[in-house]
Image (cartoon, rainbow, N blue to C red):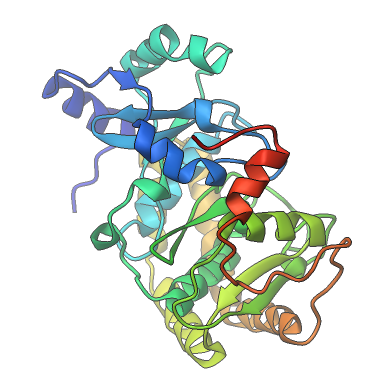
Length: 326
């Protein structure tokens, strides 16, 4: 199997495209429909970091936690893009970074970080592009995969929905970056010990801004599911699939993501070890998740999120933040 590095692939694309370095503002209709979903965990509006590039809408991550965040996100995309609901990631070439500095830095009000990277917005996807189209299966694969790679922040601000189908992103805190117990609880919703099932009805339209605010206020990551049994079956199937992945392939992907040989070897060994522990760890995660079916947890003065549609909620949220949808 031939695998192309992110920079090489982009440079090939650039050589065949007249608009490889053209970044335009997002389409007005796209921004208006989705703007309430572009607020982060701290209610910061990220719409200024959204651009139209080569016919797709992208988020520019210009403030990575460290120099390897771009590589870890691209590594995740390489590992699982064919079988998980993960949006596309681009590590910009030097030419694209130069174009970003020239055309984008003024709009976002800061210089372009040399370690910046692009993530395609979930809202930009067509349903036919998404591998898993059933909620319980998609959520189970996210939880199993996150447990395997040691990804902490599996909360609603790192997830979005396209026609009710979840896709997940942000893999900077993963692959052994943290050395503490992965299953521990912590002060915010991202810690695995704070993940909880949230039972919803089939075909429920998820009010994402409300879910994100509840995750933040309650310090619990609400994992929406319709059927516990379907989730458990999909969890087991995903664990079996992950355990069959060849560690040598992980090493090759890590190298191609731009990581050093030492770091690539360390990640490969880390994931091999976690594969051996995965069944045990997902059983522990399942027990943590199931607490959400009986214990709603602290609500910080807010009602428990129940997945119901609230048409006015998105507009009310924007009003509270001093913005309006026109």
